[in-house]
Each structure stands twice: as C-alpha cells, then as structure tokens.
Length: 583
Image 1 (cartoon, helix red, strand yellow):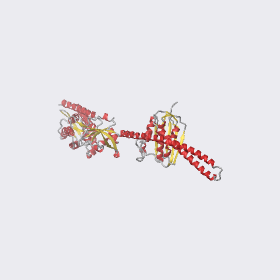
Image 2 (cartoon, rainbow, N blue to C red; image 1 turned 90 degrees about the vertical axis):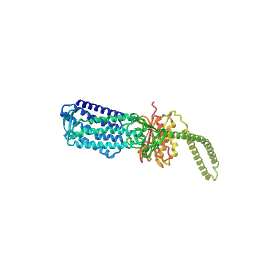
Image 3 (tube, rainbow, N blue to C red; image 1 turned 45 degrees about the vertical axis):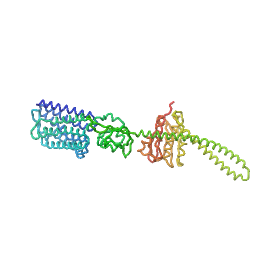
Image 4 (tube, one colour; image 1 turned 180 degrees about the vertical axis):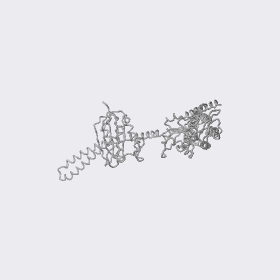
C-alpha cells in the first residue's frame, strides 16, 4: 500500500507540473493563466513534500516535511480566490478587498505550523506512510479554508451563470468540477478526519492534480478559453501598430493589445473593463456581425473622435459555437491628414499658378505706367524750367516742387509694385528641387521683403550676421522656410515688438539661422507638436497648421535640423541648422 501511495503522489506531482506548464505556455502574459499556473505550481510543491515524507523512515524528518508542506495547502484558498477573480473578471468588491488579508492569514498559518505544534501536533506511522494529528488551531484553519473556497465557487457560479455564452458556462462547469473534489475529498481526508482522530490516506494533492487536469483540458476542449485567448498570439499582436481586441458577445472587451491602447491614449488595463460601444461608434453586436474595412470613430480622451477603419470576424470554439468577435482597428489619422494635405497642396498650387498669372499680367501695365511716369517727370522738369525768371515764378516754383515730389513718390510706389510682383513670380515659380550654391543673406533679404507688408509699424527687425559660406540648396525652398518663420514671428508679436534674425556658423560646423521674437511664447504642452501637420494654435480660419510642418520637411530634405525653444511671456526662437559644403 505504501508503494501504491508513493506512485500516486509521483503521478500527482507530474500531472501538476505538466498542467501548470501547459497553461502558462498558452499565454504567459495573461493574468488568468498566470494565476492558474501559480495555483498548480504551489500544489506541486505540496505534492513533492508529501512524496518525500511518505518515503522517509525518520519521524523527525517527516514532521519537518509535513509542517513545511503548509507552504502549499495554506496558500491554496487565497490562490484559488485570486484565480477565480482573474478568469471571471467579476467585480466582487468585498471578496477582492479581503484577498490581501487572506494571504496574510495564510502566511501566519505557515509560520505557526513551522514554529509551534498548534497546527500539526505529532506524526505517527500508518500502512500508507506517515499521518499526523491536528493541533488546537487546525479546526479554525479548516473553517477559514472551506469558507473561502465556498465563497470563490459562489463568485464563479454567479459570473458564469450570467454569461450568455454556452461555451463560458461549460468552461465554468469544468473549473467547478476541478475545484469541488479539492474542497470535498481533500478537505475530508487531510483535515476533517485527522481532526476527528481518524487519520486516513491524504488525497488532497490527488484532487489538486485533478483540478489541474480539468483546467488544462478546458483549454484544449473549448479552444477559445476563458483562461487564455487561444487565437490571440500576444507575441505577434504586441508588435502591430493596428489595434486588436477580443470581445465577448455581451460587448465587453476580453483582451486588447498595446496598439489599441496607443491609438486611444489609454492604459491597456483600462480597456479590459470597457464595453466596445463605449469606445467605438460602429455597432458590432445585437446581433453580432462581421465587417471588413468599415469607417468609424474611436472615442479617445476628452471625447476626441479618432477616424479608424474597422474589421471584425466571428470567433468560434472547436465545436463551432460563437464565442465572441475579433476586432481589428486601423488608425486613419495620418492617412486623412495626408489626404487633406494633398487637397490643400492642390489648392495652394492652383493659387500659386493664379498668382503667377496675375503677376505676369500686372507686369505689363506696371511697365507702361512706370514708363509714362518717367516721361511725365521729364516733361514736368522741362515745364518748371520754362517758368523760371517770371514774376510769379516763386509761387509757381513751390507748386512745381510739390509736383516733382509727388511724381517721385509715385515712381517709388511703382518700383515697389514691380519688386513685389517679381518676388511673387519667383516664389510661385515651380521649383524642380535642383541644388545650387546660394548665399544666406540674399535669401533672408528676399523673405523679409515679402514679409514686410505683414509687419506692423511697431515691429522692429534686427539683423546679426556673421560670415557664412555659401550653401548648396534649393533657394526657393529656403526662402519659403524663412518667410514662414518671419510670418509666425509677426503673428506672435502683434502690434509691437522685435524680431531678431541671426546667422552664424555653429560649433558643429553647420550654418545656423535663428529667428527670434519677443512675443507671447508657446504653451509647453504645445511645444512638442508645433511641427505636426495641421496643428495650429491660431483661431479657425487664420491658419492651416501646415507652415511649420512644411518648414520641417524642407529643412530635413536639406540634411539639416529645425528646433524651437520658447518661454511664455518672453518669446520664441526657431533655429535652423544646415550643412555647409566642405572644401
């Protein structure tokens, strides 16, 4: 009989180790799997100690091993409770709050069992091996253990009874079938009968092994398991940028990946307590349906609407029964931003072509107005000379002087119009991206001339220029960068202030252009987003949010960098660094 009991213990130990490893290997990141594996590994510790004490001839060594086995049985109630709470995701607030105290109680029992005879008072030889007599606090430990296991089964029964899925109810029954023998048979053979003075063969580890077999079998039998989503390969989904979620048929999210949490901007553990209709505008349930690439909205923090493409596929267990939905969500923000940018680029191209046409058409009348004004000035000068020497010359001389000044001012205006038209023509001219050697200062002068109409009378522009070698660049593109930076500075300053433009060769051997203003500054929360396409702090209709994004793209295409630093109330500095041609 002793040999049979030893073989039984050996089988129990192997079964517990194998089942725990199978469950953990299924998905080591799943909390339910980890809880189940920990429960079974703890039973394996208990079984191994029982195997050892049943084969020893030393009563002292057997006593030490029997008391040490409390590391297995004493922690069984809180571990079973923890496992039930994880796999059912039941709120059970009182039970959850009691869990830390149950672990503390188990630790106290382990300490008392190994330091006093209050739990296990003595051991004696029986035909199957060593048996033990219960100490004075053993009945209290037994009542706590049984009460906790009963509460855990009640929580599981409520959770699975409320489920709409036949698969979940079947799996819940499988788990209960595994736990119930541990509660009934193990409790009688290892606790009740020894306490009543009728020692018998201890079968708790055997029923523990039966529980492990039932848990592992439920994964194989039902496929898509409450313990671990068998079709949800976390190693793969964790690397995907798309969001993935597994849904119950009641709409609750069973599992989700980091991609979905990243899209929503929420912690992953928060998602697993939500219903899908709380975060997705597309109805997928009542009745459940499969969809492919359907446009919808995800609801992010602060009710932010995130455009997404949704695909959903029904999940079925090995028997073909529906168990839930697998939902794949693709973030469309970048695609929609690119679409808007292409549309806006098309509009800007049309406006550029229109501006180039207008500039061309304005050139002709500007040229003959300028020619006529030059001729008029010559006639006016001749007329002034004819009136010299007459009696009323002094009075008419003042009139002729005023007329000459008006003609000169008109010619100056015509020259400014011609200059502006020329700049528009150059700026809107299609740039083929070819590089040429260019000086920085003329490019900055050109950008400043184009920005001058936007600078209010109270704005002062200061220039600080160190010698900088010529750059190999696309000049029109860099003009666009400098113009955008100057216009942003003008908007930040408002009616009065100072814009400082400084060029120098930095310590890293690159040309550095700083455009600084003493305006309002940029909020720290917005500083990291200023180069994002379509991000703008200006009121709707006053900015597209593309200016700085285009600057960033152009500078990056030139192999350079653009950075921003700002302080609220003190101003902002944009620094452009561009590589120089090395001789």
